[in-house]
Length: 195
Image (cartoon, rainbow, N blue to C red; front, side, top):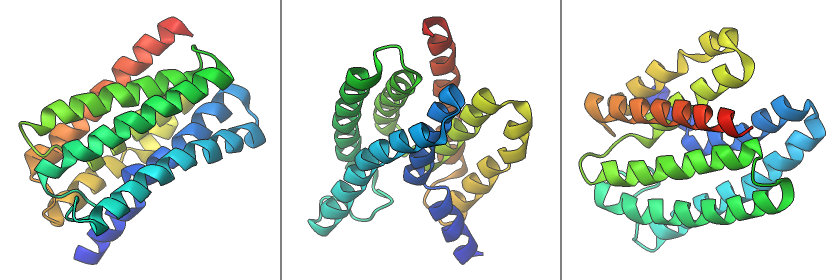
């Protein structure tokens, strides 16, 4: 079971889910696979940079592991992500304009990272659970209720995996999922008024 839980945590890792999100958003907007792939590759550069910083941080002893298991190490990671997101938002605004769906989603992610940073002072909230809930709800918003119900099983599976691996308590995992879901819905409602 531990190997299965590790596989689930890797497959539904926040970085992997974030890699697919730009493609899904741009494709829904333009119905152009080529254009969506272009934005996915561009976005992947920022995800790669975040991963590289975690890897280098782990090698330098700044982070104890790539899961950021120690709560006191997470604020350093969140700070790095906020800087990368700010750079990403500037680039997307430059190329696509301020009211692009990618900009709105990026602001939602930025808002989420800030809230996760604040929550981190209280509990070691699950980034995996938050990202999975946000991803599943985003798919439902973008592609409809049938797609949402087709993928919603990912949420409890990921929460189970994080608990099974003893990376989070049930409270931390559910709190992360709840916060990720709320941030996604609020981002959607705000974005809907701007687009």
